[in-house]
Image (cartoon, rainbow, N blue to C red; front, side, top):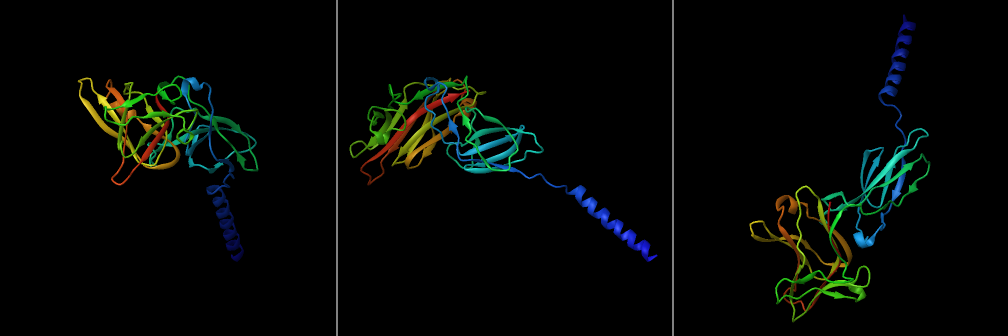
Length: 287
């Protein structure tokens, strides 16, 4: 009788171990890829302008499965089972309107793709991407050959082309609003007006640095000739050049067919004697 009990107990134990292995099989060990930053290359800078960037995340797909989005720099786990390779696809992520809580893939960049083979070591990848073809670049103002901004009203300080290196991001020229005791406010508007449609995504790209805050406004003239001016984004002081991606899609959704102008507004506060806003690569893109 005792012998039968021992055999029964041993069988239960073995069954238990087998069941545990079935329920909790060995998990595959991931390999890692490291990404510091993206590289944006130009296929036709006369078409899309500067390739300045502010890509803050990598959105990673393995065989079309979304592994996740990772803030850069990042070490990203990828499972490659057996001897096979996987198709790795990486999309560039941005902070919409410069806000950390509004992150998304940027729709106007291509994805980086490669076949990734199994490896025992960490691999470093620099995803190389470019602007998608077939996009509608409504405005590219790099201030090399002109200036798309004029004072909104005659007393306003204007935005001038400048070749001073400290105010130029790319190329030989940039745009500068300079305020002092005689010129304490500035409000400049795009000469050209634009229109947006409801079924297309649109963004404004802008490189800037400034020692005073400034605001990007939008002026809408509706189909009924009503004029609406509203703040699009307020931008804080930035000592070094920064790039921002401003979402314009809602303009098309809410004001299809309206004439749209963009305004930059800045001013000195009491006690300030001078201040500047430098801009470059002002770009408006739609699908």
